[in-house]
Length: 130
Image (cartoon, rainbow, N blue to C red; front, top):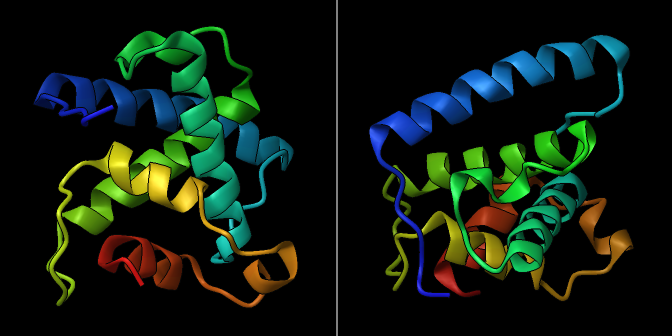
């Protein structure tokens, strides 16, 4: 997959959808949000799996996913998009959140390694190729 670009309307819909869904999930405590790398890697694996199942990266690709899966996927998409909006001091050949999510999802870090990694360091490593 070569990448995916979202227009402003798509971003607004995603943000609104994430806010509505996340308020219900966080109220129940279903999804633990923290700064650990394991959540980011798990979330990016979820989003790649959703898009692989549907064969394309489109807004409604995950329409049949659970609330938990959708919020995790949204977390990955949001984290990668936010990261790409800032200069991080290294050259990278991607400006696509999807390609960055793929790199994170396919990382070779073990669960024990992920416990000690912050999501920001995983994002930078995937972006810089280190």
